[in-house]
Every structure is written in C-alpha cells, then in structure tokens.
Image (cartoon, rainbow, N blue to C red; front, top):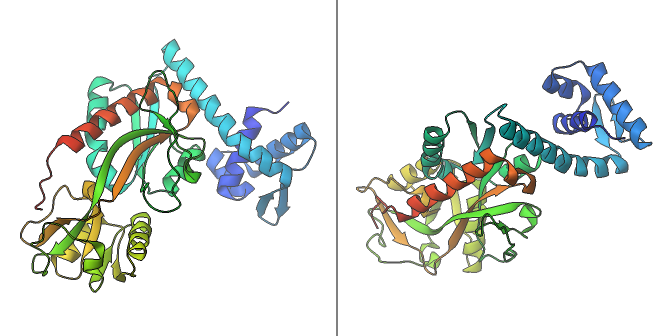
Length: 327
C-alpha cells in the first residue's frame, strides 16, 4: 500500500534535490526523510532513488512513481480543501502565479473583488513567466497560473475544445506545455510597435516588422523575446538585440530615451509617456492568448472556482477599457 505521506516526501526530495534540503522544507530531520523513502521503496518492492553523496536521482521505477505522485497529491489537496469548505472548517486558500503584464492589469481588480466578496479566503500571488509558471502548477506550487501563447506561430498546436458543463469557456489545451491542464480563456491582445517620438515611422498608422529590420531593438522577457525573434525570422531578418530586460517599464523607458524600438503586447502598455513614445499597430496582427491554467482536480475546489470567475470578469474589463497610451 502506497501512503500519501510517503509520496509527499518523495515529491519534496525531487524538488529540493537532496534528503537534507527536503528535510528543511518538510521541517523534519534528514533521517526521518530517509526512513520515509525506505518505507516507500518497501511498499513498491523496488528502489526508487539512487543515492550519490548528498544528491539523489530517480531510478526508472522512481520516475514512474514521481510522475504519478504530482497528480495524486494535487487531487488529494483538492479533495481536502473541498471537503473542508463544505464542512465549514476553513474558507480555503488560492495560490496564484502570473506573468508581469497580467499581474499589473488583470490580477488587481480580480483580487479586490475576491477580497470584498470573500475576505475569509486567503489569496497569495507570485510572478513567473511561462514555462516556469506552468512548472509551478504541475509541481503543486500554485493553484492557478496565468499564461499566454501565440497560436499563429509555427509549431503551436490548435486548441481542442472540451465540454465543461459549469464553464463552457473552459478548454483543454493540447499544446505540449499545457497537456493535461485546463485552460480558461481570459482575453486576446496584440503586439504593438513602440517607437521613439523622433523615429521616422512615428507618425505611421501601421507598420510591418520588416520596416524595423535596420533598427536597434529593445526586447522584453525571455518568452516574449523568443516569439519576437521567431516573428522576425518569419519576416526574413534577425533583430539587432543590443538591449534586453525582463521589465516592461524598462523597455518603455529605453525606447522613450531613443535607445531603440520594441514590440510588446498591448496588455503591457496601460501607461506610456505620450511625449517620448509612439505606439503603432503591427500588421499583420499577431494575437496573444492569455489564459488561466489549472489542474483538473483543482476545478472542483470552491475557492479556486470563485477565483477563476473573478479573473474572467477582470479580463473582460481589461479588454473593454480604452488604452491610455497614444497610437
């Protein structure tokens, strides 16, 4: 019989990389962790970890067990929270992770509504971009992950709609990174060109990426950077990437100072200094899908379902509100 407590210890060892680090995370002793792993190996009848000094790596059997452990533990956690909510023992907790522009636009009104309606539900927030946010969701470090993708780029799979009686907007994502997750569509934004006010195309109504082929580029976070490079390659050139940063305000500041041009999602451009920046739509339009991802087991947890509802409402408002930035 495989016990959940043994699976939790295995999960901690794999996340932490060693028995000692796992013991610190679990707030117990290293011998206690070792005993739990031995008990698990006795239950399954074969070694699951190969020890080398302070490090530990999975055996073939261990890899199979670890793969199932994440899903099993997620389902157990969901069941515990759902039962506790029904029993009135606790209001629940929702752990969110989001990329930067989502944190700045969609998350604040959703959290404000959640707190006003249910102040007894604890909500935590951390920032990470895909694929890190997706890894955190799979590892059980969050309940909902805001993520995005560019569906028109080569290698991106089409979506497959699945029937969810309580939420017809929910979709199963068959994209490789999203396999087995449930995606709740929030909004679709587009890429916009950022030009210094003195740029020769600053007054244009639209531009193609090839119009900026000879410019110096300021590129944002790693995920968006990869997509922009792919788009430029598809247009027949490689952007000159002298300046890169994970911080959108820094991108905007560098462009405003005349250090280069940039292409950013419109969601990241809620406030741009009008005197130094010009925004020009990129053609053809490059859409970016923004979704809330969760595990199937988490959808039945009342607190998670309510948070998803407020995220969808906040996203609708974000789309409806006119941009304050100049075009």
